[in-house]
Length: 77
Image (cartoon, rainbow, N blue to C red):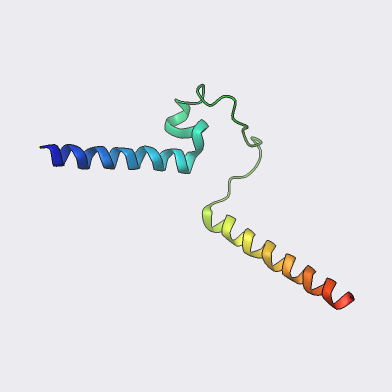
């Protein structure tokens, strides 16, 4: 019985953690904990939320642009 309770506790903790990770502290569980985290800076309401692949792609594109800018600066010197 204790193993089943332990596994259930681990699954519940993982679910709660993933909810906070994916939705943020203000939106987790439909905003039930928003009053606790009211001092936290909220993103602009009209700002689009990007998925993980979109954020990764934007980071790669930014890195490519920065690399090209460094390369251009090296050629100018």
